Length: 376
DNA sequence: AATGCGTGGGC
DNA sequence: TGCCCAAGCAT
Image (cartoon, rainbow, N blue to C red; front, side, top):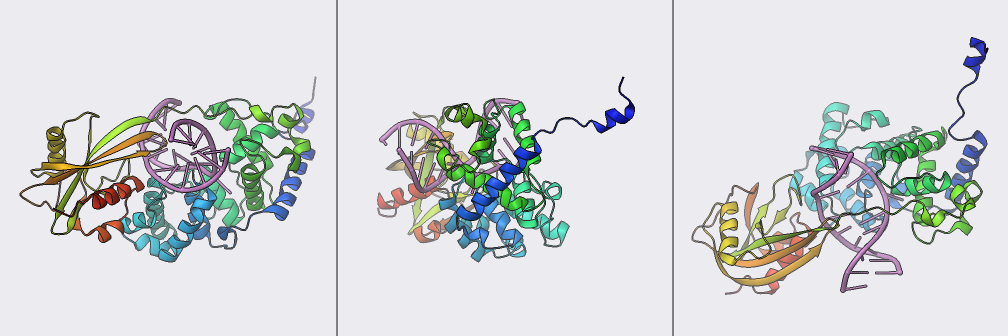
């Protein structure tokens, strides 16, 4: 029988053997010091600027983010400036970047940081997690990179790297797999340079431990990689199962009057929430014009007549196949507010172009103008 | 907890 | 061209 003293001394086996843990830490950090990319947000220590980069990088590639990040910081250089800005201005700064709820949450979080934390970002992952738009990943990223807290993070890159290093089974989305990955990330993140280590993990996944054609011969932790040892790098992790995109058809009102077009701001939630558009209403694929006119009339709260067609703009999103049918419309009265929209405005094409608008609707606007929407 | 939410780049 | 993907979060 074991004595209580002995039971207390025998702790459970560590998740990662200390020697292996140190080899992975040292290998990735040394590689990062040699190979890290010169990215603009790695030249600042401003937590706000780092936070902004993390939000923009969600589901978005580095090359896309760089110009947005620089432009946005010039326009909204501090948390206070962002918090004080009207939401439509913030959305205009986000135009073309996609996933616009990120911009809405960023704005709300900035306001909370001012009201709850005196304008300074809280420095721990636990506090950051209470702010809008801060999930587990972003909280860990900002806490570790901007404040040096040894907080773990798991993004798509880290999930891939760890699932290969440790042969973690299961498909993306599997709960046991996610839990295992977070445990591993927690066990690995060091007390010294946690932010650099987390970035090294992600950078390694983005450039060496890639989804396709990983560069195992250049890998600094190859000796530690179970998938490599067992010839399973190509099968881990298994690919995501994606749902087929749903079709969505919008009747789009192109209403011109004295050189101006009617623009509408969408409801705050859902697809393209809070963005400006040529007023649109969802219709069935084969809806005849008079029925489309009825839908648009309901949305605008005004009588609407279809005068002709200005073409169709198609746009493929990850989860939707959009079809925008441009209908030239007129009506006796020119509405300035409408039940289905937050706001209406009559704009010249130049004014319209500077509004926060989805890329799909921006293309529709260009198509309508070049099809002669403003001519008779 | 499964689903909705954008976009541009790579091949 | 069409289809894949990329530093997630909210509900």
